[in-house]
Length: 231
View 1: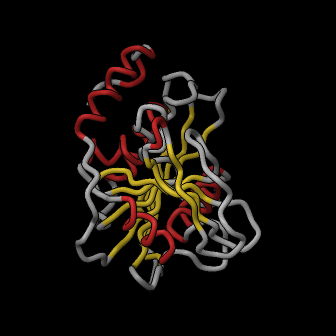
View 2: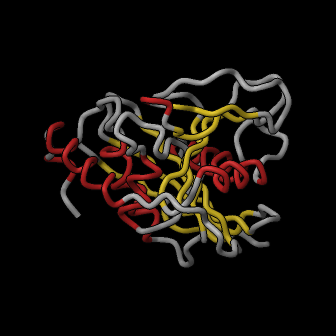
């Protein structure tokens, strides 16, 4: 893999364009026995990145274990290029997994990005892994507010009305989440899978549990490495 720490922004832009050419946006029709959730935490002024992947049984969404990694990165904090800070640590967490999930939900965007290369797409192309982006706020595109009920959604569109994903009301009367296909997934199946992962919280269970694990890891409450859970 290219050393992201030494890249300039123009070089990173060229990599994004190359990865965009390799992106596959087709519906995921395979069986899902395990679903993963990924999250990354860092301070924009720090070189330390914390990454975690939680594996859950599907459709029960019972967690079976988590992989946590702390990594030093030196690519600068540049909006639209955050994957160059996040992906190296996420790859390390991925390599620690004893079993890979059938599909991975990443806390971040898929193709809902100015160059259609959010972290879910970037990571998915590098690993050839089916991925979906589920983000807490919009990075790019236009949308109308969805209805107030859980499961209400509206399209998220880019230039010339291109469909980038959906804006989903995941919990009544709270801010929506932004769902977009990453790699080897499509628009409708990405949305429906995220809806199937909703419980009583705003975030879908895979990324909610990954977010919690990464924050506990950052506070020293969980160990680095792979930890299996009794199920």
